[in-house]
Length: 75
Image: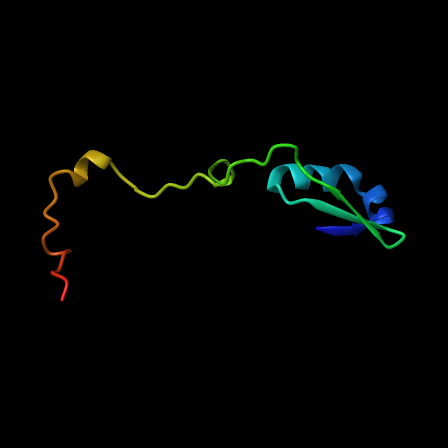
């Protein structure tokens, strides 16, 4: 994200919080010079994934299911 020094001053906490949450560096432009605020240690990609529910129901129910109709031989 690239912002001017004035925009940084207006929204410093929001911008810093967003950089922490996303891991995206913040670039500040001041008198034609670009400064960067980056996290010291980047968060892992897996830690930023949103938890999703992929299976609705009891997972034990799928153990005894006949999946042969779902599978086809590769040609």
